[in-house]
Length: 173
Image 1 (cartoon, rainbow, N blue to C red):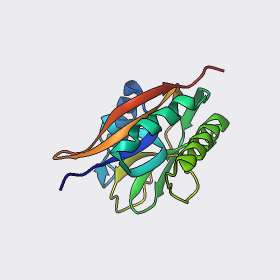
Image 2: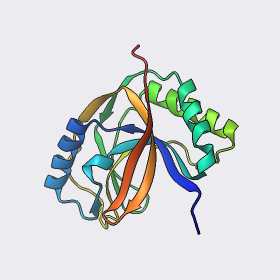
Image 3: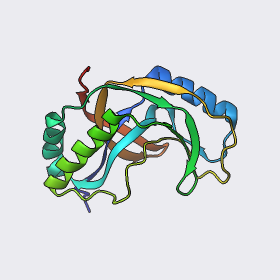
Image 4: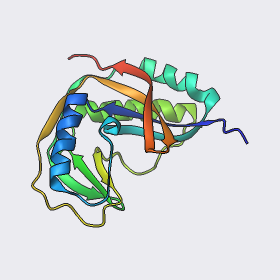
């Protein structure tokens, strides 16, 4: 049977040079679990899950209406969350990030997209299926969040691959 859904999420992409530095640090720590590929590093803003293909244009239109502000994102906490996720988190969540997530959630709800009921937890996943909690000292990574993206998640023989379907700038304050 033909699948007429797309697995989608909105996120902040990790810039390539920062992703390389994060992965080099992560690999030095020798965390157990399955490392997230460098090209897949991101901070999820809203996970949409399986969405009908015919909803894509409406989702792109929603993103066109957002007027988020660029901000500095500092990832200075190492944490284990959920079941085996090793992540970087900000010790202080930027107000502009929270505003962007809130505006996005409101527009998605108005479209009828059902989102996770858990509160937003900003994080960048380093590894999945980790059996132990990380004990490395907290790193200090940062980048200027200047855009957000709608990603399509596809399963491949090498694991998940995230393809950009659209990208929108965040306004410079």
